[in-house]
Length: 182
Image (cartoon, helix red, strand yellow):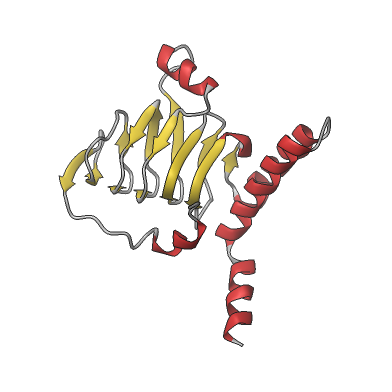
């Protein structure tokens, strides 16, 4: 009975739906000739209509992604990558510094405008202006502005984000353990 309950919870989970949509859209784009790209784009638009999350599945390469409250989240198509666990809260926006910025253009071609380490949490209604790299074990507080690389673990808040503490926790990403690629 407990196993059935866990399966039902996973099927009901918005997070699970979003991860499945992303996986299916990426698979379609890579494996279905001619129609795959169009079907992938339709799935991405379906996520916008169903959950209010704006993304381009093909540009997301995160081992374990959590977006439990997706309304108003803008991931776009700039390219996000992480070998670890990343939790994104409601209303977070990932935007470009400038469409003509040299580093942005170079990293956009590589689909790596936003690079994250493991155990990265981005608080509700924060804005991340890329290109940017964020190291392992970083929590960005709600309504913060990240406009430069973060190279030191810790908790960051404010506009622009400043480090306020070294204390770090994995409570926001601990449920993603099973999704990491070995």
